[in-house]
Amino acid sequence: MKLKIASLSLLLASGLFALAGVGLSSAGPTNLAAADGDGEKVYEQSEVKTLEDLRKVPVAQIAGWNKYDSRDYGIVTSVKDQRPYDLCWAFCTTAAAETSILREGCDPTVTKETLDLDEIELAKTVRGKFLDPFGVADGKLLEPTQADWDQSGALDFVSRSASHWQGLYNTGNAPDEATADYSEYVLDGFEKSENNVTSIKNLVAKYGAVAFEYNAMSGDVEYHLAQGQQTHASAIVGWDDTVKKENFKDFMGKTLATHDGAWLVKNSWGTGFHGDGYFWLSYDSQIVNVTAFDLSRHEDDTYLYNYAGNDTCRMYWTPQQQLRAAQKYAYVFEPQLKDECAEMITSVSVAVWGVCDVKVEIYTGLTESGSSYTGSSNPAATVTYHTTCSDKALYTIPLQTPLKISDGKPFCVVASVDMLGTILFDFNGNTGDTVCYTASYSSWSRLRIGDGQLPAIHPIVTIDKTEKAEKYGTTLLEKIEAINAQIKSFGGKAFYAENYDKFNEIGKQIDSLSEEERGKLWTSDKKKVEKYEKLIEDWEKFVKGADASIEIGKKLR
Image (cartoon, rainbow, N blue to C red; front, side):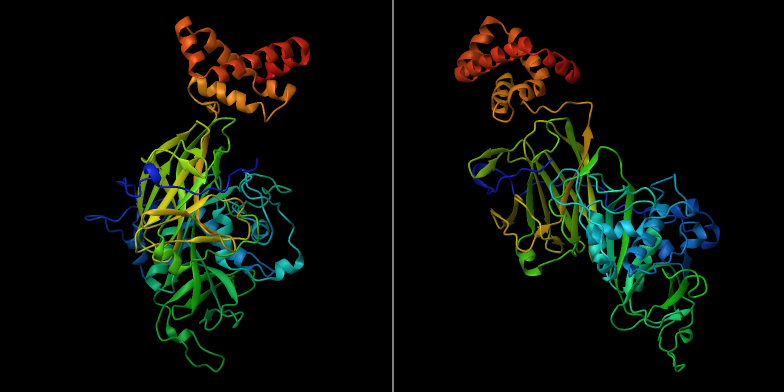
């Protein structure tokens, strides 16, 4: 199913969308442990012996310990060997993601022995192409070549691909060939950190592990201090403030570190390196792209609207000057399952840089009018969310109440941030006929998309299969008008079979009208009703002349 959206401009005339609105408070980012607060219990590290114990401890308290090791709580999977491929970026991502899944307990069916995310499948989605269930971005999953494997990756690439719900499968569970399904695990969010000891400790305490990039030219050593351009990527699973700085020496025996303390690093060169596959990395090291992943198991009938996404995955990209001038963006979406069932918007994912307030507004029931969309100036849903990460991050912002889309009409998602934050862009080569707008001061304008730059804003919906979507409108006249419009899209048997139940439903409604009501319907739009009655005559002839149609109708009921 391919998304069909015209290239239109969005007008603020006649009060189409209100630029201001009262935000509804929502919970901030969820800690995997208990929330901080006055009068909270202080846990002694010696009494925190199990994962259940760990989940009770506030993240800030864990980050304050002078030692921490995620392996002590059974949430670190086995050390892998990336050879012969240059896929350290994929291996460190799966290492951090696996620990996050176990730390949070989002999939109670797996343990550290059974959870093994497939690095090759992850690399395919980053180096190849993929489909998306709504057909918003065309493409197919390609088998990467040896040259693709030999290219180094970046954690920004992986963050972007995973944010489109691609590439995270337990080994053996990935489809044999490209399908429109989402991956087994989906990315609810990620948080990045600068090279700051306190910030990194908080992320490791919260998620159990982080992926990062550094220079690994020293090779097989137990103690390492990384300097210079990054050449490798691994995962941090703990720390120890008491590791002496004297352990970190160059090949001449000179001490390189100026401070005590080190990160416990899980590498991807097998257990034959560093003794058991782990080593200590000095706090004084130069590391970049520190990334934590928040994941959940994908639930059936849950979908992500995604405009970008079928070309080579690139990093989140932020044109600072442009975004500082325009802090508000809007996407217009057409419900993709309007012919089948209702859609419930449950949340919206937004990529943001900085600690700020994010406001999401959703306008429904839009009508295409010439070169614009018209609709109510009051949003159907509004939610505000306070971010906590000072670096780049992806947040899945839940609505307080799921918003039902069942009228088949376009809806608009507006995301804005205050002046302390920046909405990040997806940098991708395929944008299609995206209906995206930017607000500057008091007016909206069509966003000029260059080099595939799209704001990273994605509605997330669940499908309500118990309710048939009202693709034909709500009033009887709207239903008749919609049936008439469908004639151009279908022909003969296909049209009548597709609309079998609707003919019966509308016919019964007309039959139940009183003479007075029937007269009002007739006079309200005589031409539409005449056209519909002619359609009914053709339908009856079709039923009488084609026995197969009866069987088709039975199947559709």
